[in-house]
Image (cartoon, rainbow, N blue to C red):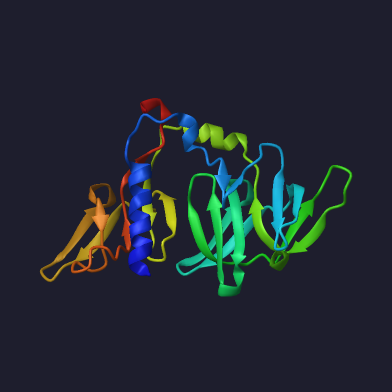
Length: 211
């Protein structure tokens, strides 16, 4: 299973890291979990396939992953899947293609179906998918010249960002070396099994102006 996740991670890495001539709008996450995202409202798809449209009012979503507790502001999220909650495998996807899997800590989703409706609390066990609306923040992301590193975690999760520390101390059989993250292209957890990737570090250009 680790090998399969790693192969998927490598394919995603190639998609995001390889320059191309695609339209800028293809960088926007237009759909998630097979459902199109609206620009006007959030969508709840229940376990019985019924659909509710309105606004999710939670300020953030917290998910406990194998590598720690992650708290993401709601409007940085594109969607959440509770489809495999029974297997303790829930997935949060952000608008910039980050993917976190684990258990969503928040048990209730605060939801308002319309301007005149009262907010209600919906237990996450009743929900199959949260499809969150697109926001102007995502449009600004396209024109941003900022560069990010791409991390592929051992469980297949994908994170983009910058390392808090600019260097990594590597202990070899000979000595200890201080390495700059900017000089690292690839790291694997076992030299004898390259496909079992722990995480990768590459430069990702999110600048549509350069395409």
